[in-house]
Length: 232
Image (cartoon, rainbow, N blue to C red):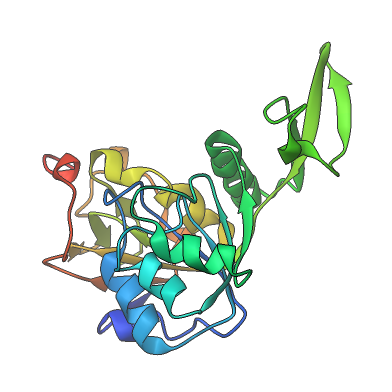
């Protein structure tokens, strides 16, 4: 049964020390800023975070890292011009890093939601990213075994939810949201609007409510990428 949380703090309450947490977003687009801030205030630590990058500037995931609450990060782009908090922790040996090519990251998360334990891909073969992994020749190509990535909790952002938990997104804000929601034992989604059952056009629903455990309405998100503007 869907839980409609009163606020972001209540929504992230299930996150425990040592959890694996997926955080959606590609840059600002689709990033659940208020849920990340609530997680910072909530206090859970020793986290493994799965995200596209390792945070930007001094807010959100970057702040979570600065506070020493992230033990390991699995991401595609750990270093950017403003990823100084990750850089500092990594150089000091205070955070573990697993770099995953972006397509592999999305597929490893998707595989978890689809019940697929692992898959073979040519991406990464012959590079340090393939070290220690099983390699087979399939269809005449060397391919590397990549395992699914599961999570205890996913924190994502959608545009609208109905009271059954069905979700619609805005444009590029969709990015990692649907696959992360399916790959987590507990999926938490912030939305701008919650509507009654039957109010969403079924043709626009991207994430079925079966993958959503908690939604919280954040009517005026702190950050919203301009690419999220427009029709759902």
